[in-house]
Image (cartoon, rainbow, N blue to C red; front, side):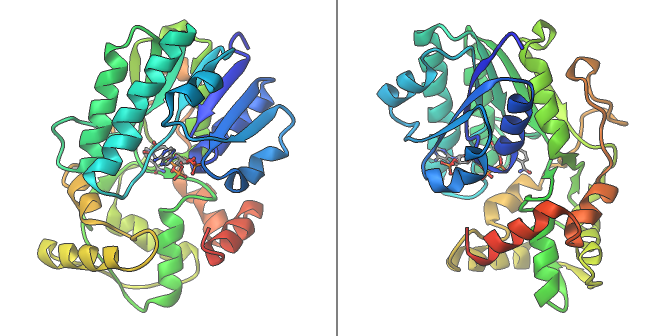
Length: 316
Ligand SMILES: NC(=O)c1ccc[n+]([C@@H]2O[C@H](COP(=O)([O-])OP(=O)(O)OC[C@H]3O[C@@H](n4cnc5c(N)ncnc54)[C@H](OP(=O)(O)O)[C@@H]3O)[C@@H](O)[C@H]2O)c1
C-alpha cells in the first residue's frame, strides 16, 4: 500500500473495526483513537494497530494524532441525539479533522457519510451528514466520500436489534414499515474504503454503497425475526402512533430502538439512485446478498455473534 500509516477516527465502532482489520491485513500501520480504550479491545490484539484513548474534539490532540499519517479515515457517526450532538459529531468534527489534515499536510482523506445525506433533508441525521459532506467537498484534500444504505454484519445494531426484539415480543409494531432500504454488507463497505485509498480515480468522488436487493423495513424486520427463529407478525403503525412510540422509547434508558429523527430519515427511501445497483468498478467490490450472510449470525451460527450477544447483555 502507498498509504501505509492510517488514522481511523471512529475505528473502534462496528464499521470502523472492519476497515481497521482490512487495513492491517494489507500491511498498514493503523492508529485508532477512542473515547474509551476498553471499548476498542477487539483491536488491541491486531499486530499493527495502536489504540489510544483521546478526545478528537480537541485540536492539539488531533494534531498529534494526524502527525506522520499518510491518510485519515473518518468513520465517526451517531444515529440518535439532539441537534447539537449531530452538529458536533458530524459537522464540527469533520471540519476539525479536515483542518488538522491541512495543517499536517496529510493529503488523503476518506469520509463516511450516509445514503440520503442532504443539508436540506428531513432529519437531523441527514442534514448534519449533508453539511459534513459539504465541508469535505469544499476542502482541498484528496477526498473520497462513501454513502452506504443500512449496513449489516455480525455486530450490526439493526437486524440484530429486531432479532432480539422478536425473541421477547409476540408482535412487532413498527413505524415506517414501507420505507425502503438496500442493505450493504459491512465487509463490502470496508473493502470499498481500503481499495479506494491508493486509487486516484476515486479522488473527488462520492460513492453510494448498497446491496443487490431493495427491501421494505417490514420485510427486513420479518427476515431478522424469522432468521433468529421467531416468526412474528409485523404490525405497521400509522405515523402518529409511530411518533408517539418513538418519543416514549427515548424516555427509556440506553439507545432508543427508533427515535423520531429515525422516522424522519425514513421519509425518503434509503436506496441507490440507479437500479439495479452495481458498485463502481474502481471500488473493487461486488454487492453481497444479505440473506445468506445475515442468516448465519442472526441464527447464532456465526462465531462473532456470541461475543455480540455477550456485549449486548452486558449493556456495552
Ligand atoms: N451502521 C449503519 O447501518 C450505517 C449506515 C450508513 C452510514 N453509517 C455511518 O457509518 C459510520 C459508522 O457507523 P457504525 O455503525 O460503525 O457506528 P458505531 O458502531 O456507533 O461507531 C461509531 C464510532 O464513532 C465514534 N463516535 C461516536 N460519537 C462520537 C463523538 N461524539 N465524538 C467522537 N467519536 C464519536 C465512536 O467512537 P468511540 O470509540 O470513542 O466510542 C465509534 O467508534 C457512522 O458515520 C454512520 O453514520 C452507518
